[in-house]
Amino acid sequence: MPKSRIQQINLSDTSYYHCTSRCVRRAFLCGNDPFSGESYEHRRDWIETRLLFLASVFAIDVCAYAVMSNHLHVVLHINPEKIAKWSNLEIVQRWHKLHKGTLFTQQYERGEEQPEYVLKHVEESVATFRTRLMDISWFMKELNEPIARQANFEDNCTGRFWEGRFKSQALLDEAALISCMAYVDLNPVRSKVCETPEKSDYTSLKKRVNSIKKYSQKNYQPKELFPFVGNPRKNMPDGLPFSLTDYLELVDITGRIIREDKRGSIDASLLPILQRLTISSENWFCIVTEFGKRTGNIVGNEYSITHYCELNHRQRKPPKKSIRLLA
Image (cartoon, rainbow, N blue to C red):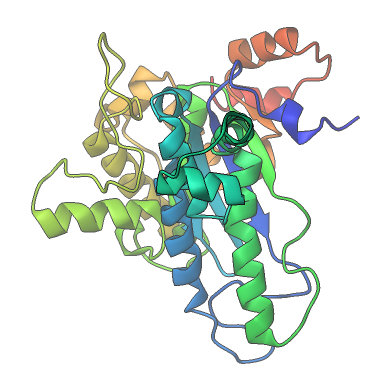
């Protein structure tokens, strides 16, 4: 039996999740529709702008994203440490960037004096807002609903724009995380929309590369995205447990192999990330080109998945083939 979304997303298992949303009725999120001849390229900007705005409001970090013609990918990181530092006033201010809130929370934000019973109501509202601001379901709702309304208005129609609710995958370990991020960043290359990863518009990799070029600093990273902070170590800052330089090199080499339309071979000596995560170079190409086909709603190596199933009392496991890809 399928598990509810609240059971699929659990911080005790992992704080990283891969989410996807796809359009219905042959609708185009962006790009050129071959059936109608219409161009919806401007909608790419809608989704990227909204996504990065939400990252500045929620206690959820954007690790990677790719906006495709009829679907989108995003790798998210839930950050409970960040939201724990926010005061009640900051929680209210952030929520009001999305919704009006209540009369009482509006008064609270303005600093108006309130009686005790009103303050109690405000505290209850703040607790609700705090929970929502670190909830992936709310994040995706705030991302998808405005886009659907804009697209329906532009298309002069009503009804569903998205194919049901978003799909999510729990990324249980570092190997699953970097495999999924590379898969997302390489979506345009794999679809032959562009020739190389750095030319793939409306992806997190392109945004990271543009920031490096703009500021002429090798390790400069955009504030809107969850930063790369290097390999795991003591007193490690908040961020992705990889080197930015290593990741860019890994994706660049992989993207060129994909674009050449041949399996080729990857020299593992050039890819320190694969060495550290013990992913064979032969398996890597298969992972980043068939991640969606080979994985279920939980992704990781055999130990991570076994541990997850034991904690969550699950008997069924993903196919052994998908597990071996991360071994």
